[in-house]
Amino acid sequence: MDFYEALSRIKTQLNRYKPRKLQIQGAVPAAVLIPIFNKQGLPYVLMTLRTDTVEHHKGQISFPGGAWEDQDRGLEETALRETEEEVGIPQREFTVLGELDDFLTVTNFLVTPFVATLNYPFQAHPNIDEVAELLEVPLELFLTDQHFRMEEREYFNQKFPVYFYDFNGYTIWGATAFIMNRFIELVFGFNPGPFSVLDDPRNELYLQENETRRAAKKREQP
View 1 (spheres, helix red, strand yellow):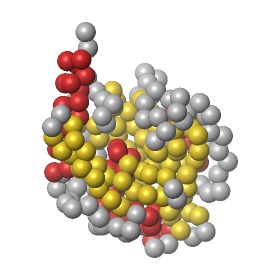
View 2 (cartoon, rainbow, N blue to C red):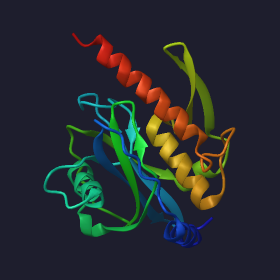
View 3 (cartoon, helix red, strand yellow):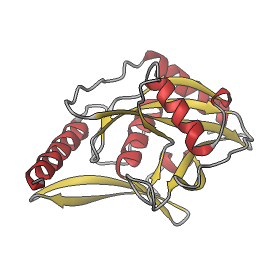
View 4 (cartoon, helix red, strand yellow):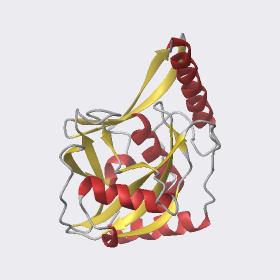
């Protein structure tokens, strides 16, 4: 699939989609950007490899973004501001196309993902305290089951499915993998997992898992 065909499908689906909003008491509002760009006629996604010194999700692959701050007029502005601060690409280089469902992470961030196009080639100046590497991941990687796997992880005697995508020796997993999985199914109608995320069963499981984690942390606190 070339870039312009992918872009047309993304615009069409996001224009007609009403994202699911969650209300989770005590969760920290945050936003991420899913930047799509045209590289040699093909769609790519910009992701970041986080450093081992950041406070949350050390050494993991993620979308650029972060927590909402008082000066932000909305979560879309949060996503753009945090992206510029992390990867050093000016906000003017992005065009937001739409919004996806809210997602609660295990670290208690309530994340709103935004999909945007990014002008390419771009000049990036990553924040070395937060970003170890910028990754240009072909969208095609998520449109096949060749790079996908699912593992069950046990927490407090309960088993939960976790999604993984393998990319050139890196592993995209956790919240990032699941948000991408949702995006791909919504726009392209493809899901390599065992059930549809559009029917939302996985989100309910994920919320239950995170509530369990949060309750356990509270019990551990003196």
